[in-house]
Length: 277
Image (cartoon, rainbow, N blue to C red; front, top):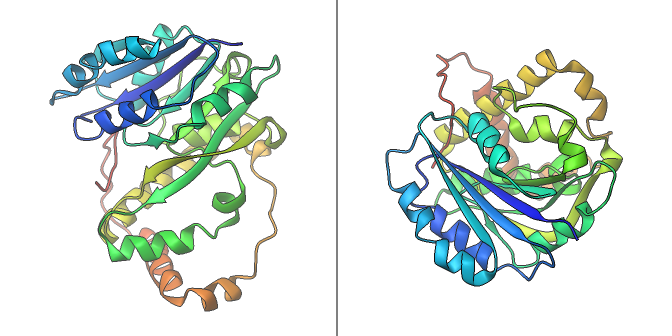
């Protein structure tokens, strides 16, 4: 059985990292050595200290913990630093605001313990805390075939070393999850049934801001790595749009309003981390 490294890039995640680590430590047993690497980057809060306080709990689990205190902020650099410290044959990338379900890690390891290049993720359970606008948007957004039936990988994705060998260092781009996914053919991408909780950004303005940035990220990959587009998901059969609109007119109205607002001209910021929370 392969060894495993769970890589968590963390920028000022003091409010979210404890529940992320608690969920990981509640995972089902994995018949392999497991290492957690927390790549704290550019933090001005106590993310590093919180991660270090988990050393004993991780040891009691039978796992190991490595905490990196990286002065420079930036998720892609944090991934490069985390990978340099990673010992595992299977690499699992987990955002610090994500909570995995108990079976997820073991299921990812099982499907990635093969010789050929493979990529995998679980099923996202998209959570909404307070915003009614976000709740309507999310409900309709989840009917998109790519989200409903694909292997989107946002928040959690994993690959074996044979797959990771397809590129060198992570490039300085916006959409790391899209870049990773498109380095694998559709038949090399596996969806396991276990879930993870992934928080949707809250509020109309935040949705517009982050969705705009995600669109820019996809366009960036199309421009810089056009050969990867051959690995895009093939067209999937979906219920007609008008069926989905009739089933959820409010969800469609909010979804359409966000899509329209994303296209409006604005002053762009160059923040490395864009969040609505």
